[in-house]
Length: 330
Ligand SMILES: CCCCCCCCCCC/C=C\C=C\C(=O)SCCNC(=O)CCNC(=O)[C@H](O)C(C)(C)COP(=O)(O)OP(=O)(O)OC[C@H]1O[C@@H](n2cnc3c(N)ncnc32)[C@H](O)[C@@H]1OP(=O)(O)O
Ligand SMILES: NC(=O)C1=CN([C@@H]2O[C@H](COP(=O)(O)OP(=O)(O)OC[C@H]3O[C@@H](n4cnc5c(N)ncnc54)[C@H](OP(=O)(O)O)[C@@H]3O)[C@@H](O)[C@H]2O)C=CC1
Image (cartoon, rainbow, N blue to C red):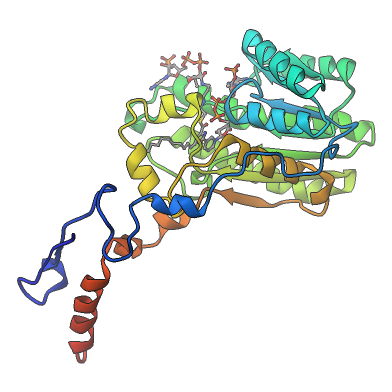
């Protein structure tokens, strides 16, 4: 177990041998990460079946990862979905797989969201296929870890174009047409927890995601009068090939990441899909301008200065408390 050496009564001399996940955490009996047993992910769709009957949903980046999971859930709940991104073959495969499972049509439309003309043509195609959507999920993104001093102007432009400009082009193009047609809609943007805090090594993504949050909060205030709701989900880490291969290519950081999550595990695509479905549904028709952090507690865990004290055992606390109580005056 942990060893505490009192070489002096100074806090700095308290040497705590940190426990690894394979060793017991003091007398609590918890193994690092074993708290995940308290928080099992539920994978089935949460909303009543048919919640999205007769509704059209556009999911950008819906061919892979979290976008694919959101598409599967909305489709299962009755929506006709359109998924849009650059790789038509990937989109078509996903669309066929989901359609064949749910019995509801999923359409695949090629679109590079960085190009406003392509976005406009994509919306033309959507209008022809299904009419204007009732649900828009801006999920497409680009990202990679990189020290900022190594970023080229084009690297910066690539990420900010996909994330901020792409979201703006899709949102404005659809918003204008919906307004013209006097049709309401739910807009949802998928950002990240570091949109709020900022983060080194993913600076273009952090900057662009913060911009997306400002865009969505602003439009929530401005376009409620047209029947439009705007909300934001900030996911914590959820394993997808797209994210993990670009943010932790060797897998070296995964354990440390899980250790700092109070619920002891990564999120799952199905869990975020259920949340996105709820936010986009009529059950949430009073929700607008909301920023929902969905991260197993990672953000607050990273933020609190004293949270590292989780590794102090009950026996060590007895010693610490005795030292603190002994202190008189300042
Ligand atoms: C303590 C560490 C903890 C680790 C935790 C790991 C797990 C964490 C999970 C939590 C995740 C949180 C947030 C996630 C946010 C996300 O957005 S994840 C989604 C990621 N998905 C994608 O990125 C999919 C799409 N991506 C792409 O298509 C490409 O990656 C790209 C580069 C974004 C776009 O492709 P393309 O247009 O083809 O661009 P290129 O021409 O290839 O490149 C454009 C310029 O960018 C430069 N570049 C490309 N890659 C890099 C790199 N790795 N480093 C530096 N620069 C790069 C490239 O050289 C081009 O610039 P130049 O023309 O100047 O050369
Ligand atoms: N997974 C995680 O842990 C986290 C993810 N997120 C966010 O969740 C969302 C989904 O990420 P995730 O599923 O993990 O990763 P993916 O890489 O699987 O998803 C990104 C999607 O964006 C699409 N895309 C990229 N560039 C463009 C473009 N120029 N035009 C149109 N579509 C584009 C990709 O499709 P294509 O290549 O066909 O264009 C892909 O389907 C993103 O917004 C991401 O920032 C946030 C926090 C944590």
